[in-house]
Image (tube, rainbow, N blue to C red; front, side, top):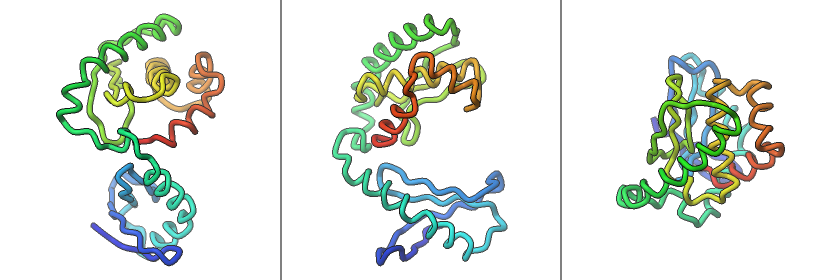
Length: 186
């Protein structure tokens, strides 16, 4: 449901999603500057608004970042761009996955290249690695970090201390790389 709130003398539109699976309030800002607030069913409207207000500084920072990104990564791609770049992305990503899977001695089932709006990559319980074709347009360090991140999920299907220790083998400065990646989030 579309809603609107006044923050710092600015009207901010957001989509309110009530979810049976939600355990807490969550706010997300996407690269098209859309704002989505997800909430459990029983949360009252005034609590939701207080939550948004409490996150207003962060919210405006994210909105500013997405307004400043003038690159292809701000989802100006079409299905045609995906079709044109999918094979090149597959070749690039497959080479990088093979390199890092040998280093980590991890085996995967298959690599799937997708055109996703909100994710750079994912790892399934079936050991399938899924990657956004737009990795092709990232700086190599960021693309490699995403690849290593998903590969590490083959061993640790969570974001525990063990998982980050594993990521740290290839990316000792993974915290800085993550911050850099957040600046170009989809």
